[in-house]
Image 1 (cartoon, rainbow, N blue to C red):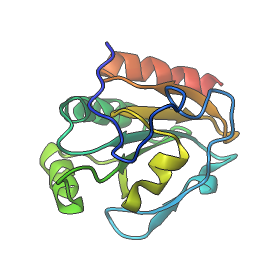
Image 2 (image 1 turned 60 degrees about the vertical axis):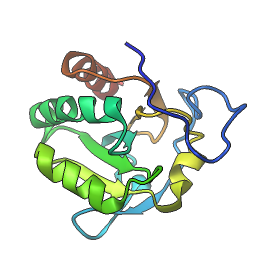
Image 3 (image 1 turned 180 degrees about the vertical axis):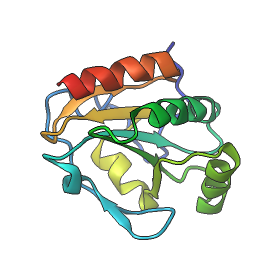
Length: 163
């Protein structure tokens, strides 16, 4: 089911749907983590696959899929994959709103803030939620612009790990 919450509020019209294409190198980024420190995408290159989910708190489809991500995360923890939720400030949503939602939902995978939506712009994001599945080789394996449920997400993660 394709559900799009909204368009990135920075004039992204005319870009190809989904931004970076499958097979392209994923653009490296460095973002502050909710729990302190920072995350850099290239630190996982050659070591782990990465599932990067772009979201914001007032996006109903984003909120709907987050518990599904948690279910799958609990199943794949310890395997060669990382989950990263990237909060992209939109409208009146604040980082505090994002942190409160993560806490309220009991989510345990990593979360970071894309201040200024710089990563979202690099990835040519148009709709929320959008999830990038990035292989160990640092290339985009799959892009999903939809609300994912646990069975679909689990299949995608299995495909990603198989390469």
